Image (tube, rainbow, N blue to C red; front, side, top):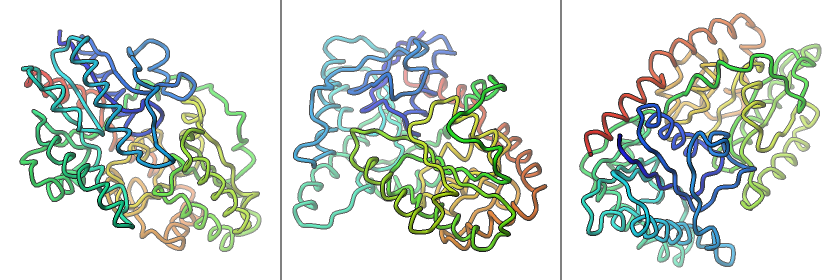
Length: 395
């Protein structure tokens, strides 16, 4: 048995958090002792495994600021992770550390220690922000340098896709080697509760229901889903009842979530599809599962998404995926077999939606092909064995 300690900055609801929890579950299934340390964990805004005792979670230093004067998010995240790393080195015993998102804590974990650090890079943080002013450029310069340097200090670096591997190699000259560990699906949670119902929206009232499932962030390009829905409404028979459900992570502490949700509601009004659109925030796992099982197709709009677990979840639930033809979906979605890969325009996405409406048999055939693809390429068993081998290799 190996004692594994995870360090994650903010254990809320998102793809990175889902991956960390699945990594923990995989190692627990191999009889390892696992604890996730984080600077923030809200039992009302988290995945169920982190509040029902399945995965042990310890939150420390939530009193440290997440921002200063509405800015300096990256610096605050760095400071919170440094405090967390120092606490763990002083008071927590471990055989191996697994870190993701913020690499700055890696040297603090390795200082005067022979313990190994595995770093999971979802995507270089330095590429996730803009530098529109000289002051912003000056502020980011040391953070960007330290990200590359401290990432390279890890004993093993994993990434979530071949796409991300290529980006990491080009971005961090200090990183000589990284390996791909695809995020996986713990399919057991999708096999239970077939009698679940959803009171948030009556999907039976519509002929076709399309689902957008993302955090309320501008980079997710949810606008495209609304614009495509407007295209469908304009080009589809009035007798066909079509609906779009926009659902996903929403945190009142995050200004962008609050602002973007309002922006999307206003856009639906402007496009005259407010009666064809339902917005759901911070849905439960049960509601998410219901939607994945009962909607016509997933509309996945982020460009250059690092991996994207939602298309994999959708395919496992026999739901076709309409995704932008870049990034992770190029590796997960098989075009015209498990869904459609489209240029990021309302017309192209809308045409794919219309094809599913006009050829309703495609939902079943693509759904079956999607589930088979997930079972072959993204099984939890294969994910578990590969992660276990990485951990044992370092111990």
